Each structure stands twice: as C-alpha cells, then as structure tokens.
Length: 575
Ligand code: ATP
Ligand code: MG
Image 1 (cartoon, rainbow, N blue to C red):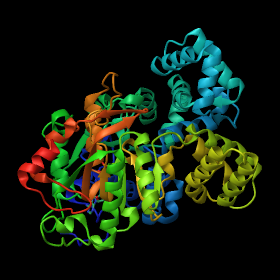
Image 2: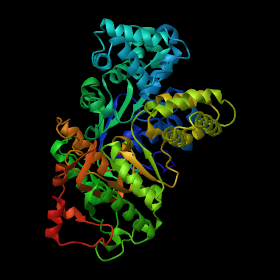
Image 3: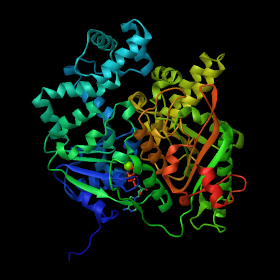
Image 4: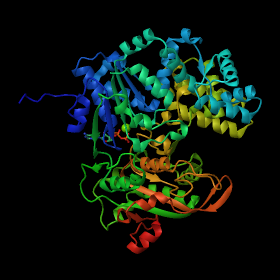
C-alpha cells in the first residue's frame, strides 16, 4: 500500500470521501440531516483545487443563504488560504445579480440597478392594476406563469425598469432569458464555471432550476446536495421534484448516500426518523447516530397552560441548564457526563413555526435577563425601518461600516425622535445589521447588496453569546447543542389559521423534522393548552406529529422540579 499522506479528505468517513473524490460528471449526494453533506461539499471543493489542480476560479458553489455562503467561504479559506478568494460562492439570487451586473447591457439595465423591496414592489403592482387586490393578483400571475406575460404584467415590468429596479423574480428570470437563446453567452459561463456545486438542492424552484441547467450543460460537473425530506420552501414556489428527477436529467449521474449522523444523539435521530416516516420522500431511509458515549437523554416534553407559561418554562429551563442544575441531570437520577456545565447562551436555540410566537419568548427572556438574537427567514428589507436605514446609509460614507450604521441610525433617530415606536424599531434594525456591516468591512456597495439580497437569518451572529430565536424555516442547515421547539400544537405544526384551510401537511411535517434535527444533545418539545393568535384565544390540541414519536424516547419535564413522571402519566401528557 502507498504510504498515507495528509489529505484534505482526512476528516471524512469512507462514504463522504467517495463523494468528495468524485471529480468529473454529475453527482447527487442524497442524505439525511447531520450526515455531513455540507462538510463533504466543502472538502470536495478544497480537494478539487488543492489536490486535483482545478483552478479555483472554475468553481461555483451555491448555498441557500448568504450566511451559509459566508461560512463556506471562511471554511474554504481555512483549508486553501488565498486560493479560496478566486471562487464564486454565493446564493442563487446572488448569482443572478452577478450575471445581471455583468450583462446589464444585454438586459437593457443600468449597471447600478437596485433590487426593489417587497413593499415598493407591491405598491407599484397595485398602482398598475388599479387596486391592492389587483396588484396581488398581478404579482401572483407574474411569479407563477413566466411564459404568458399579459399586458398588465408587461406594464409592471416596464415601471420597474424606468425606476432602475429589478425584483427577486427578475434576478433569476432575466439571466435565464439572456442565456436561453445565446450559445456564445452560455459557453462563456460554462467555461468560466465548469465545476458547480449546489447545497440544499431540494429547495430550488423552476426558474432557479432552469438557470442551473443552462449553466451546467448536459454533461456537467454538477454536484447536487440535499435531502428531499427537508424540502420546506414549497410555499414559496420551490419544488422537490427537481431533486427527485436529478438522475433522469443527468443519466450519467452518480448517486452517493450518507447514513451516519454526526450531529445528534441516538434519541434525537430515532425520534426524527419516526416523525418523518409517514411522509418521507426517501423510502427506507437509513440514518443512525454515531460517536456517542453513554445513554442519550430523553426528549423533554412540556405542556404549559398558555404561551406565556410556555415561554417562562423555556426561560427557567435555560437558567437551570446554564446554572448547572441541568434538567436532564435529574432525568435518570444521575448526572450525565457530556459536560452541560460548559454550555453557554449561544449553544441554545428556540425554534417556532411563526414569527409571532417569538413575542412571548422575548418577553420572558427580558424578564429573566437572558440575552438573545432573533432572526426570521424574511427578507431583511421587509421591515419599513430597514428600508429607511438602507436609504440613509449612502449619506454616511465615512469610516468602517459598523460606524456608518451607527451614524445612520443616529441621524434617523433624531429625525423621528417623537415617534417612540419607530425609534425602537430603528435601533433594532441597526442591531440586526451590525454583524453584517462588520463582515462587509468598508465596502459600502457590498453591504448594500447584502441588505437588498439578504434574509434576516444572514445577520445571525454565531459568535455572540446569545440564545438564538429562529423560525423553523430560518434554521435550515444550522445546529445547536440545545434546542427548544415551542408550539408543538395542531394549528401551528401543521400550520393553519383557525377557520382557514390546511396547507401542505407533508411540508409541515418536514418542517417539524428539520426542527428536531437541529439539536445535538438536548431537545425539548413544548406546547400550550391555550393560545392566542391574531387577537383571539383558542384551545390547542397537541401536534399530530408528536404521536409518531415513540413515548419511550420522551419524558415530561417542567422547569421547577424536572422530575421523572410515571410512564402512564407520561403518555397521557404527551398525547
Ligand atoms: P443538514 O441536512 O442539516 O444541512 P448536513 O448533512 O449538511 O446537515 P453537516 O452540517 O455538514 O450536515 O454536518 C453535521 C455535523 O456533523 C457538523 O458539525 C459536522 O462538522 C459533523 N460531521 C460531519 N461529518 C463528520 C465526520 N466525518 N467526522 C466528524 N464530524 C463530522
Ligand atoms: Mg447542510
């Protein structure tokens, strides 16, 4: 045998390694949560460049969020040093924006076009259609039927262009249109990026799929990575069908499956597999936990009277976890060995289905003095104060950006001094974007484009010692030692407004699955018996998704006593 040398693939297991060593032709990595898909992607790119001689500038890596792109860039930099800078690592919208900037002439756009924010977009649509409802219909037609543009839609697009604006739909659709009829342009981009990797491929939509097909070509070095059971953006037009037909689109594709979960303990992995089973798109899925020592603690289940009691359970449980009297140290009458005493706030995450649920949690955290950062999956510019701030920033061009943000927020607060709510929201907006500003350094245009293309979750700061408050959609790809999933109720999981129709129940179950699988060591599922939403209260039943989890994997907990209850009682409390 050849002497073993140090390789960039050393940190991978044999299956991951096989995926990473695949150099030419299409590759599908289909695997469950925590199996190291993203890690494999990182090492594969580093290996291609450092050990297979692929020029770094030939690599295009697509992630789902800008935050994930940044993290990937950082990891590649750690593995490859300067070479990493030549790669293109971005989101699909970032890629669309990059192509549009380069091809603005062909697209009939100014080089300095801006991405319109959602409110202005709706205003323009309403104006063109003559009413707000008409505007909503116009946008729905535009986003779902790309090929039959009616006269109203055409006028709407013309209005955007006159104002030098594009929207998110344009960012993908215009590059697709430009590339579709133009062999030369297609060849240009295929030569530029012969190696394309796409993480979270299960959540691409039709237009994004078309763009990737054009860029990759028929026999591409395209690596698609994902998990159909984590497809959670169908409500926004994503279609897991594109993932499922990858091997038909690319018949020469090699498929690699990964089955070892490195993230979570066996209790969490088993519960998650049980929870997804009734709707799994990967029949016979294999997923097992590795690298565990000792007995894994059970999943804590808490039933509270209402959302405020639920929130104070979370706050008190966090106090106890950090204070050393861990809830689970009492689970089995002995202290568990995996070092809970070393937990800090940023090891903890609270997940919920709807942003509104964060209110009760925030108020309980404020009362208990628990520091937190709250992020949703919404676009950064969906809040009016964020738009005021972005408009103000160019007037503060001096200094490192963090300073710019501070100075812009200060100026706006003086302007709106008599509007207390607005000032509070402006300060919150400033705090939200500060980590982004810090990362963009002194590059104002990079910062502005991060703001226009980004989602709130992009501004998540994993280094800040704060508890993360995230919507389930925003938590995609992330992991935390301790996870609280609140609101495990029918009506929230699956989501439904009282008196309204059900949404896609399978997608809701996948969302629950994504939530469970963010946890590494401790998972708590809570619900309220009574909840108030949109101002009206109702009695809430347990989420039907809980019923799929074997009760031997769970135990009831409350923050005060955290004592183990009799098994019979336990089942009653869970159901
Ligand atoms: P998700 O579906 O949630 O995005 P994923 O499949 O992308 O999950 P990763 O985030 O890449 O999973 O990996 C999960 C965790 O397991 C990370 O902390 C990662 O560092 C660790 N991990 C993955 N592979 C290995 C390995 N071979 N050895 C040690 N740790 C690993
Ligand atoms: Mg991942």
